[in-house]
Image (cartoon, rainbow, N blue to C red; front, side, top):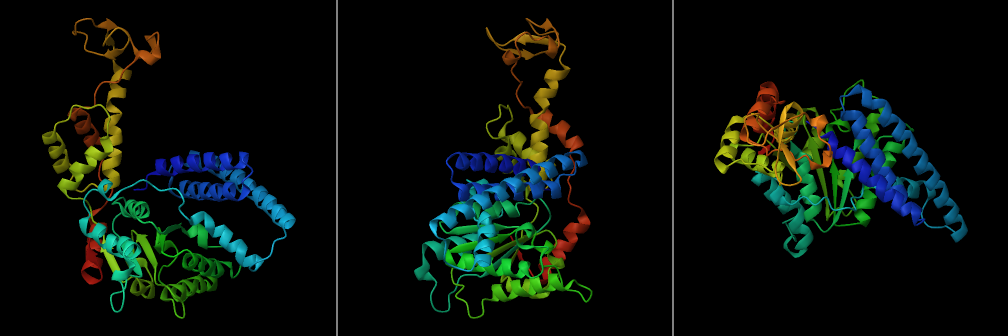
Amino acid sequence: MVDINEYKNDFKMFCEKAAGFLKEEKFEEAAKFYKKAKVSLENLIKFDENKYNQPVYEAKKKDVEKKIEELESKKKKVAAKEGGGGEDDEDAKLKEQLSGCLVTEVPNVSWDDVAGLENAKQALKEAVILPIQYPQLFEGKRQPWKGILLYGPPGTGKSYLAKAAATETKGRFFSVSAANIVSKFMGESERLIKALFELARKNKPAVIFIDEIDSVLSARTDGENEATRRLKTEFLIQMQGVGKDDKGILVLGATNIPWGLDPAVRRRFQKKIYISLPEAKARKLMLKLNLGDTYNDLTDEQFGILGELTNGYSGSDIYNLTQDAIYGPLRKCQRATHFKKLDQKHIVPCSPSDPGAMEMKINDIEHPEDLVAPVVTFEDFILSLQKMKPTVSQEDLKRQDDFTKEFGTEG
């Protein structure tokens, strides 16, 4: 399950950074962050199931596109004054369009933040970190992996692993979606893919991460659109690297439906790692990480019990479960009929029989800032478990297991 709050936070952060660069009249940097904001909006449009939010996203997208257009115009005027020159205008434009894919802000996700998935983390360290930090170890027949495919049910941490790789690597990290490389104009999609790989070659060592790769490189069919077929062919040519020096470039793909990929694409990913549902130990750690420093009274034993009770839950399911449990104390505040003073200033909801209990409701509190939420309890999680069910079906898990037996590696 996709966490849309992450896209909302990214959109807000990118807009703030763009506005900051705009004040300094750094039009190129501002345009880059508005392009990133546009990608976040496109993801919200794609994944937010609340239909009432769609018109808001569309309006914001138009506003961002208008700002990007204005900034591009200003950049051209500045370039004209300074005398321009250099590479082909169209190629330069495409590379500028793709520069928004370059992750310049470190996601601040370490390997320790990823619970479990030890095999997957080890494979990524081998493929991403070692070749960049110790290039002398990869000479002769020992060559770095050129392609790694992360696959598994939705919400198991594939994109999170990519963020950890982006944090840990000192090379350039390109985060690409279908919106970045698919164009409605004839021939532009192929040129965008070519420009992407050329940009990566100029910025080696580099990692190209393509999320939801099946949306771009699904299996070719007889009735397929010619433009789509050419896009896939160009990607295959670029990834193969015939006549190109691709040492120092890793293509990292993520998908929920690996069986939907074109066989030629699948072959180019030398390692295919199954990111499965977390085990009990990993689920226990996820619950602790997601709860963070939220005030709670859960014991280690209770976290262990919850780890067992969440069998079949994905990482995203556990995040949503924890968020629902964190709201438990707020619901207590809303339902409470009595409150008591915690100290001279703060008050908390309480039982009518508690010493010092005052009969009142939340709206009767004279100073709202004095209200303190109760601690998150084990019971809050149990109540949330009754409502929040796992989102991955057994049928989907069977298909993933069958694919792993035939093509993949356990992560």
